[in-house]
Image (tube, rainbow, N blue to C red; front, side, top):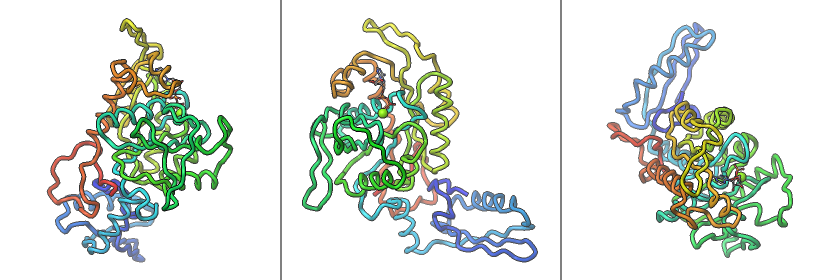
Length: 366
Ligand SMILES: Nc1ncnc2c1ncn2[C@@H]1O[C@H](COP(=O)(O)OP(=O)(O)O)[C@@H](O)[C@H]1O
Ligand SMILES: [Mg+2]
């Protein structure tokens, strides 16, 4: 049973006060609400009842309600706000956005670097965590060649700064140039945890995480560490690619991460004279967005400047803001801003008569 406002499992949120199973197959459940006049009480009544009645041997269900104590509400706030990271690790980061896709080469890293550039251009404080440990590319795309991060007085790793604003952390800063990283399992988990806990990210509006392709170890680890992260899925317009991308959406859903939207990349090729060819077909992004019931944040065409600039270490959003790919990426960044939560203090629970909310809103992280 998922709390429709908090978007998390009510068992995991410790909102199930008690479960008593009687010999005759009747089950009594008490659910704790955040406020006595909780508007979604009816929703819980039906949802919990249905979930339990489905179980073998159950002959009846009684559902009662009470209200979380102030201490419990605070614990819930902490749970929603900081996940399983130690207090304060990302306390000053307002939004965590994972950029993922089913497969490699669809432009996740280019999209991440350019979203970072566009958000920065719109006055946001942005960080980029390159979680593609095997195929790291943010150092190159953001023009951070040979520098190495240093450790500050608080013994935290200071991210490198790209373009006077974007804080960047990548495994690429710690290994010899182009060396292969062969970590898996616990090593990988530890490295990612360190990137979140031991890096001085400071105050950020957005931390963008460039995921490796596929649905493996890294995504699982991050989901564990960052239950409040949202996903942006990058796909190409081909129906086949959209099927692959859907797998990463399914994984996100399984991990209970919210999907913020879809970005279609390589949406046709625009010639310098403005003519467009649909090299990779059409409509994949739209289909996927409809299927997932999330917004299509942008359709980014293939352009020469995007490729050249990402090789040269300058996001096209900075170097050629009028390029059609740059414009589409800027548009997508504005879409993300529009979806971001309004800033409530973390302890504040949803008001009984909640005003209509923008799609995708959830409690902020800090
Ligand atoms: N819209 C685009 N226009 C031109 N080149 C692109 C575009 N998107 C990606 N590329 C190029 O395709 C290659 C793969 O992109 P990348 O962002 O590294 O993908 P991923 O991170 O998904 O593996 C890179 O060389 C990049 O410059
Ligand atoms: Mg990549």
